[in-house]
Image (tube, rainbow, N blue to C red; front, top):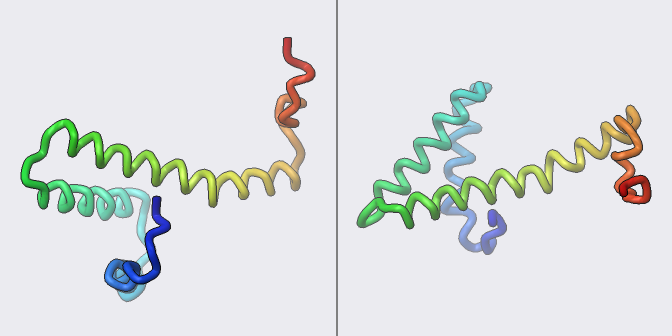
Length: 99
């Protein structure tokens, strides 16, 4: 969950400041590299890297993905559906047509 207490954020916001200072548009591959580098650095700080640590980081990445979808992508998709119309009546979230 990215919603950490505000008091903890300034220490971590230095990374965002650094990205702004670079003033470069990142490709998807470069963004993947940056995220992978952070994950690798985080894992390397652990006393050991075993299943639990790898499972923990996979959970973080999965939750990041789901929260991005929930907060950013889903509202965008809803807007586009409203702008352009549904694919079919299955999009209306009504299960009256289901058996």
